[in-house]
Length: 68
Image 1 (spheres, one colour):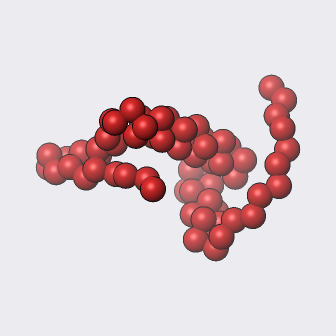
Image 2 (spheres, helix red, strand yellow; image 1 turned 135 degrees about the vertical axis):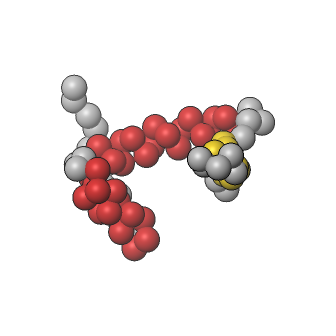
Image 3 (cartoon, rainbow, N blue to C red; image 1 turned 135 degrees about the horizontal axis):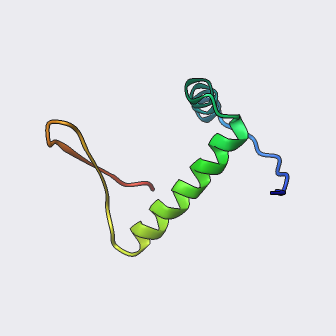
């Protein structure tokens, strides 16, 4: 599969998060960014449709996530 090259600038917290996720997951930074963009697209589309993203922990506690 071929892709399109982009040059992007990361703010320090995003760069740190990218580095940490790539290190912890063993994925290449490019793969982490590609996955993040796809997840962001799904979440934003759902929010526009009035849906919510909710995380459930093992104790049944929930946390609603809203990206602004």
